[in-house]
Length: 94
Image (spheres, rainbow, N blue to C red):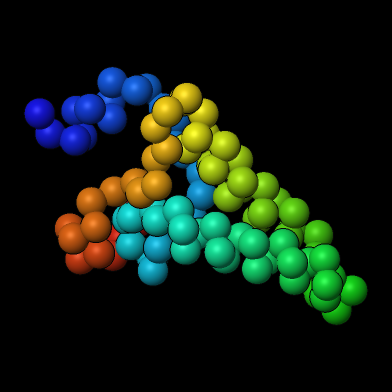
């Protein structure tokens, strides 16, 4: 049985989060690092962000809501979305 068919049986909505390197793959660990750095930047340097500060909470929420979806089923954790080899070769709109 292909992995794709196994994941379809879970019926998880994994809309959200950020794609890696502009292609069609989501890797949760790099995304978690980037989201953490953004959140810490807002806390420590938010006063220097000017008008961009108003968009930062939405950018953080977009990633964190995705992480909550990726861990919403007890047991499995969806740590990657997409096929890494074909997805890295396909730079187009997801």
